[in-house]
Image (cartoon, rainbow, N blue to C red; front, side, top):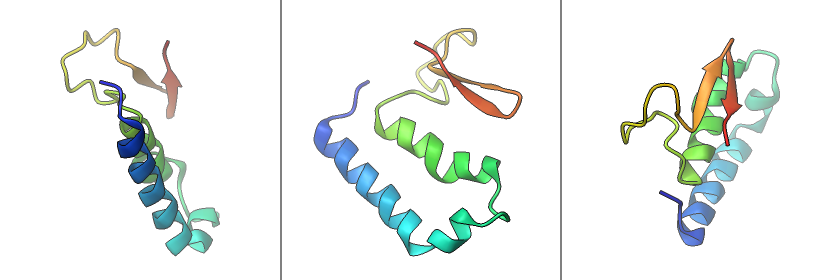
Length: 76
């Protein structure tokens, strides 16, 4: 279900604040790509209203985003 502009805006603001509070850590070489997905990428797509974990029961071959070799592939 698509997110409302207000809901998306608030979620995006929260993600930005989270990043700004510990920016040095998030930009360091010690911060892992997989952790970035958990902390920022998945919440960003969830804020857009995407069902990134296929919680609404989409067929396993047709989720809105799938993981391929450690990266997220966006499907249209």
